[in-house]
Image (cartoon, rainbow, N blue to C red; front, side):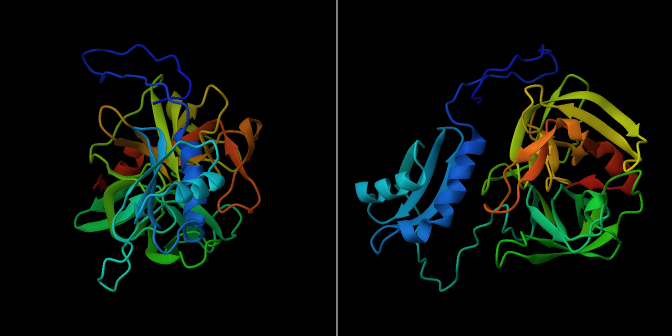
Length: 338
């Protein structure tokens, strides 16, 4: 589903899955932004009779779907519409606000996940390898070596082996929780990838709440093909075309190998600050990992972009990015995808 119809590369009917482009009015990025706004105000929008219990950016219907425990009234719809104007709303019956168990339901999101950790969520470390300061990155694919499971992410997101990595956003109260310590980043800086001890799973966030299963078969992205990125800050970004694969960059500050150059030809955001380590993937044939986000290629292709939560200083996003090939990381660590 696309808001603008791009020109597709020529597909091979013998090896490529069929693709149907369906035009829609609202982008997933727009609907997810409205979803977070309604989520933040859910308590104020609800009343004693009707409680907002779920909010979802429904890709298929191109609507913001709001689950309600109680009567679905025009008054409630109007209150939501004031928070999310010019947004197609679909109010549906949701699960009970109070299940009667005495326990809160586990509602995972990019900012508040739980084991088994999915890729595409916020992670945080007290020091990174670029400037030694605290900062956020994004969780990458779950991998295994023997019976041990790890979170794969960018090595520059930490400064040392043994450093604690936490899931969540330091600017959102109550979300930081321990994932585990850095187990191996011995390939850095030549290979910008590291393993974090932790219980990971074969799942990935495609939207704020939407977790999907990912194949355990890695995907080799070739020149001319397109990929998506799934950074915690930028969300899902697709139509990113591969321009060069498996090369090294020897410029000062880089010294990385196993890189792929991928470009949004329309100049839009492919990935940005805080998305490092997040998944790079394809959606057909099947959802499969192709790599992890490394960095923007050059400052000339960067521009300010929204931060999370709102009110933080703008991030820097890029239309041309490097990502580290999944084959290089798996081969180096002797790992396989979950």
